[in-house]
Amino acid sequence: MREEFLSELVEAISNWPEVVAIAEAGSQVRGNQDQASDLDLYIYVHSEVPFERRSMFIDPRSDDAELDNRIWETGDEWTDRSMGMVVDMMYRSPDSIERELARVLDSHEASLGYSTCLWENVRSSKVLFDRTGWYGRLKRKAARPYPAELARSIVEKNYPLLCETHSAFQKQILKAASRNDSVSVNHRTTAFLACYFDVLFALNRVPHPGEKRLLDLSGSLEFVPSALRDDIHALMSAGSRNETTELRMILNRMITALDLCLRASALANVEPTERGFSQTVFSVEPEYRVEPSTEGTICR
Image (cartoon, rainbow, N blue to C red; front, top):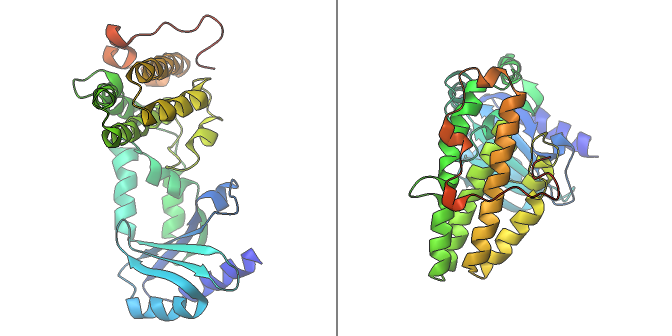
């Protein structure tokens, strides 16, 4: 039923003259979907598809549609009446995604968190329609090995903000907790975790999978803190109570575990260390250092 439904959608949308390619991505393609998973369609267009045509296509199929959402990428999200499935149709220009892949794969530019998500989106996607073969060529570029210089760039941009700089997120979390500023604690914790996971996937030379199911997906990495799941749950709990002492202990432990994973990864990956990571990447400031547990490995 799902494949028939998907084929019907693709056949209709591919007839729109603006459409260059259609791809499916997300949990449905990766195989880790659940009952709440959407059908994520990425529609690459050389010019904007008129709203009226999109509306005429979706409205007869749905009683629950949000069309022309432009908060992030332009998109139409709707629940199909016959299937009960949520369809998220996102529209992109070929130029924009080519620039994004060139930014990370050629120029090795990092972001604060989620540096390689769009690369992973293309890399793991399934081609449903490709009018000229352009998307196939893009996927071949996305299939290249993880560049060592990209991993270095991501670590050097994100790692210092965990604990080293004056404005490090760890310090901001603790300061906010001491003020009982729960909103700020939550905001800075989110930023801390964005940088933390960006470093974690980069040191494993694995493109970042996005914001969902990060604990489950990080479990398959070669270098990952063994207590990561427990530590994040503890971090959320302590943050909700503004427990400064407890937060300090958990953050110290998480940073030390990540530091050890980074060291282990650098030793295992000879090529990326030929030019060497900076010493600041391998250090945790003395006031934040926590000795590794003697009862078991902190980085499996």
